[in-house]
Image (cartoon, rainbow over all chains, first blue to last red; front, side, top):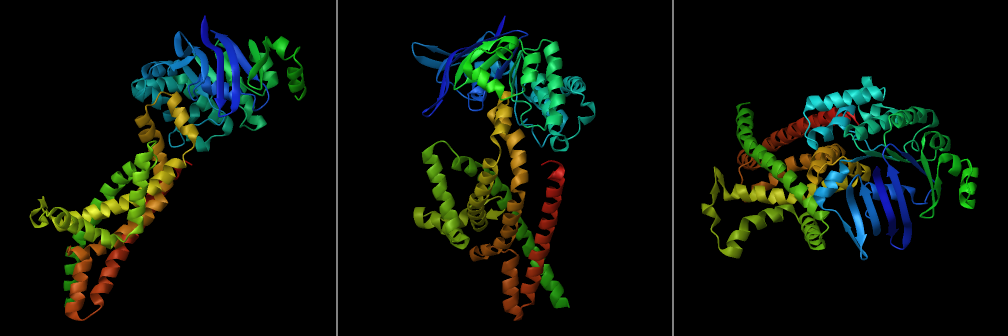
Length: 250
Length: 223
């Protein structure tokens, strides 16, 4: 079952063409890693998929809903209500966490449950407690983000993204803003989620991690998918010259 | 000694009016300032320009002149006799004072709020959007509380200035504290009433400073 699909997505900022026709599919329970050099369009792809940027042409489907489609050369986005529904189906973990600094860890996780999903406080607290335990942060429920390490903050933001029980979770370089010794905890959490067959799309520079955890690897450069396949193909035995050159840097 | 006490009593009576001007202006101008800052950042270029002109005029002309303008405008422009206008216990003199102070201070507050709102990282909006918060929920729950913390020092400045500016309303014969201190000084041929008035302003501003420092400290729990 398809959870996410992009068809021939194109996106330009002014004259700069950032996505030059991207097509990809993510099946339920599948983990897709997107690798490639900076400026290759990985983050823009993720931002388009998560409604933070609009595309110029192509189609994006999340679950059974169409976010945007192009017919007869006309690109149309779904209604505002549709957008709201689609946003309830996915979660996004940012590179620099984007936690709400004025809220405690608990409120960071529960605020949208209470005010968007209209859960009761008790229900939301139960969800929060369960997730914090999973993130090994049970003792931090009442702490504020500024009192946590980067790794802890990122785990809170993963918990926040999971709280809405999404069908698919997107990660935008989740460990790039962290010191090396802090990445381990975050990667461990993502590994745990992989074992539970959470559907995930991960933009990452952690090659070893991508190889271990992914079902599917996409190598992107210059706004295009250069190579894709199983990690054993793309990472261990790349065919394209550009993929080889990129991976040699690691 | 008796002279002092009677002067202090007299000024205390006026101080109630000073406080009223201060409180009404603060409440109304913060609300209006928030709206104006929104207009200043509006996507509509007409609204944006109009608001920019408004702010420029308010900041570029004396508050004293604005007070007189608001006071005389209804009569000279429309022939409205303002002597009969009353809202509750308040005569038009007082209402004009509040209007002039509010539109003036709103311009300053608007620029403070704008700088605070524009200093917010984009990621806060994006995180809120992804979590499904509506635009108004995002503004009131996520953005505004953080903006408030950021603009607090600048607001304290304005609030302290407002306390002192209330004395300008004397020009419309508002019987606030400074009005009484001037008349008492003239009657008694003494500068003592002015000094007492100065103490009143200074103590009141001291209380404001301490209060705002406390609020700032209270918001220190996050960065």
